[in-house]
Structures are given as C-alpha cells and as structure tokens.
Length: 416
Image 1 (cartoon, helix red, strand yellow):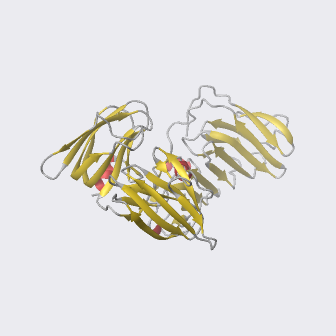
Image 2 (cartoon, rainbow, N blue to C red; image 1 turned 90 degrees about the vertical axis):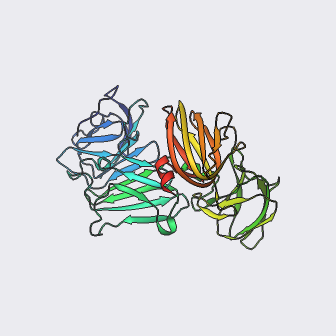
Image 3 (cartoon, one colour; image 1 turned 45 degrees about the vertical axis):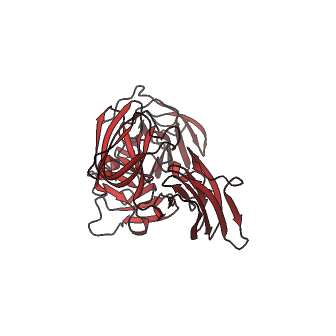
C-alpha cells in the first residue's frame, strides 16, 4: 500500500496522556516521552500508518462522522496500517500499560479520497480496501457483520464461525422483519488482530430527528390525494410531535392533539391532507389501532424507516427526483399508469412549470423534468409502475426518493 500525498504532509497534532500533557506530530513519537516506548506513526487523512508500535497494546482511530476502527492486538515488529478509507480522522489513541496517548487531528483540509464503505438509506456496500493489509489478503477474513438500524434494533448478517461466511466485502441490508429499515451503522469484527470497524451511515441522522432515543421511531400520516384527512390512533407508549419542515410535521396544540391516558398508552387525534403534506410523530411503542375519522382524502401511514404500514390509496406512491450537488439535472421517466405533479410539497420539493406530464393515450404517462442544486427536487404522485428512467441532461448527482426510500434510477425501475 502506498501513502497518498497530502497538501501538507506534516500534520500537527495535539496529544494527551495519562502521564501528562504531550505534544506530537503525525510523523513521529510523542515528544517529551520515552521514545522507545511510544509508537511511531503517520496519519494519511483517513488512515494511520504505524512504523513502530512501541509498548502499545491496542489502538483506536475515530472519525469526524462518528465512525471508528479499533485494533486490539497490535502487530509488533512490522509496519501496519488501519482505518477506514474515505473518512477524515478526528483522533488516534494508543493504549499502553502506562496509559493512553491520544493525538487529535487539527487539519481540516486533507483529501480523504473515495470511501470503501458506502450507504443508501437501507443498504451498505463494503469493499475489500476497507480492511487494508491486516492479513495480506484484504476481504478474505474470518469475520462477523451486524447491522444497527435507526429504530434501535440490530441484525446479525455474518457469524464469525459460519462456513463460507468469511468474504466480508458485499452488499448488506435488513431482511425478514428488518426489511427496508434505515441502517444507522454497520459493525464488522474480524479475528486477525481482533479488529472492530464501526461505520456510521451519514443518512441516518435525518431519520433520528425528533426522537428522544434510538428505540423510538418516526410515524408519518401523509396525504396521498387532494382532500382532508382526520384520524385517531393509539400507541402503547409515549408519543411526541415532530417537525421535519417542508409541510411535514405535527402541530400539538393546533389541529393535532396528543393525550397521555395515564395507563401507559397515548391517544392521538390529528388532521392533515393533500399530497406531500403530513403529520409526523416520535412513537415509543406499538400502534394498537388507527382510524380515519373524517375527510375524503386518501392517506399513507408509514413508520420509522418509512416502511408503509397502512395505505388507504394502495396504487399511489410519492416519487421525488432530488439533486445532491450544485448543477442541473434533466430527466425523463415513464409510468404504466397515471402521474400528476405535486405542487405543495414545499419550496424545495414541489414540481414546477419546467416539469411536464404527458398522457400518452395508451395507459402510460411520461414525465419530463428539470431540477438542480443540493436538496432541490420535483415531486410526483404516481399510480402505477415506473418502467424506465433516464437522465436527459445536466451533470449534477441526484437520487430518487420513492415513498421515503432513497433509490437509484435502476433500483426504481427494478421494483415493478
């Protein structure tokens, strides 16, 4: 493995130890301490390269996104590298019998290059270079893999002792009762040097908004057609209102009421309606009943990871084309059914005058749209299957939000 050059190859760090305050640079041992006992290491933005472990028993590198990699049995007598490619180091700690030497990265301008572990909302892709040269053959490891979800649950995907379960690089997602759930993090353990990788999903934070604990989940009552919706539901646990912005949020004390029944259950009465408008709640228990009490509108009730729980308009889906970077996106897609523009999905997500829906006269409809810049997009109510989707212009990156699930165009078309 070769080091990637940095704009400044001598990164200054601030270090502390159980033995007292130290100062250190990433190109050598901590100053003012026993040079024979302290590790000699360099930091390459994402990775830590150790030339001499000294008296180190274990080491841990933490990242600015909350991820970490911990090595619990160091490879004395040889150069070794560890970390998570593509993430920016926040600090590195070395544990010895005498205490901990910690060096904090004060460099904000390094280039972490491409990530070895990437996420969508509900999927994790792990590539071989996440494991560097721990055993000389990255990716073929006796390993255990677990997924943590934003609702506080976990699922084991690979067991350490499973026959054939050693090739960790793969695509992982929740299955069975966890199907479609948003991944908060992936945990990988392997018994070469007893290394732990805990890699967080940057998309998870938006799903944790308004929740007091990871065990809570967000519940959304969303309008699917024009018209009002009044509803009641009961939860075996606590409930609080959440405001996600853009017309998505409950208003306790306004037209939504939350009542603690004094027996551990909570009752909610609410009012919403029209596509793209919704009430959102943080719920700490099971929904024991849900009833539409008034109004002619159709609705979708969906839970934490935006998996649909109940749908009063089963043929209607909300589809948004959302840009993720500066620039333009022109696109076209066809639906075997009916499409209409949603113009009240908030300033950033509503379809506009530069978006057109054409009825083809054969039971299909074609959409030609244009959007661009981070977070801006166009929203449509779709009744039927999307049979094709193509970029027709522009170079900005984008994704498709389909009923709250982040999809690629290929994944969207493959659903039908």
